[in-house]
Image 1 (cartoon, rainbow, N blue to C red):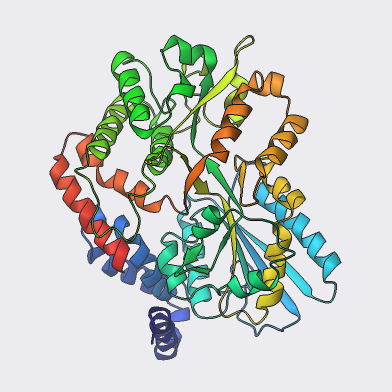
Image 2: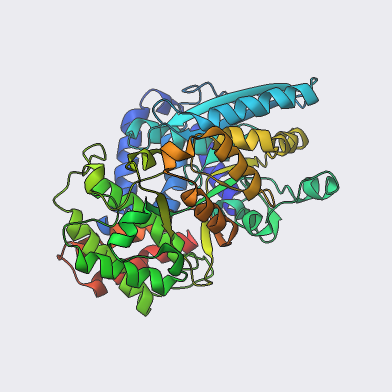
Length: 477
């Protein structure tokens, strides 16, 4: 009996032994959650999330199947259920638009298939939504999930390699081989991030490359030539020089919330190899890793006085970094948007998976599930999901030119980006991707683990030991 089967058996036993649990679920959830959390040290409680999510999933969520319209009914072979799990953005649902486009195209190609598409948008700051997400994971483990799961980033998979190995998703390799002649050319490097043991369990559709967006004029003011920062050491040295020479400015954008977000992405981009599950321990004494964590300490000191609320930012005219594509409209007249991209140990850039899709292993309609994913690989569908997001990297081979053309024709480059320099440099870096990472979860947890060091309340060595303890939990449970 494998790992997934053991948990399914536990879920079944729990249901049969405690039928009254459906009327006292809230109290049992709270008690069992507290017992599970007490099993781990407070500092590594979140670090055991990969284990706790799956353990808590069995215990916490079994009474709420109908919360968002999912029911444990038997699937029919001519019916296909697709569930879209995505973060909630105010006023912009690029995932929704992509799914609706794919839905229309799929229905036209296979009219005999009864297709249902459901949406679950998540406010990651909401405890209630996190509980619903836990219920979803539980339901899938119990065999009652959708046929196809479409998700954004690591919202659903915090430890993708372990969950793929556990058999949550079916292997799509046979379907891809059968359609080899008709299948568009896909980037093997991107596909590998959704593989385990050489089998394709998830299809990463899009990815993004972390960039420090500013203007050519501001870069020049601080002595930075983005084109010359072409390897990891150069990026680290550039960031260090900037922080030391400009104590009034932040590298990440002016507040704690931005620092958490930006530093986690940059951590992944610089060190994609760090959290490879093949690593028995983390190389936290490596000179570049230590330099990076020292820079994080300096950055957190810099933003300590700023509020956590991202809406209360330093005024754009006083910022060095202009956050994200949507904020590039803060470029002043006469300035030109430009970007500095972090490079990894190979000298290339790191892609971070954006949107992905997989077919659940217990689906009775896996072929049509694959056909739906295949529909999502069409250029028009991908662009619909990209046009309002930052996922300019696609799994389609040679897609950079198409994306650049679409951006140029649909976005007012002269006013929004201050010219095309940013787009040219950014898309060039997307094309130089040499590593792709599925999840930022371990990197975020490592930064949290080192917070006492950043705040001056613990030594580097103490935090490093707790980080190693977390890594053993993440790798093995």
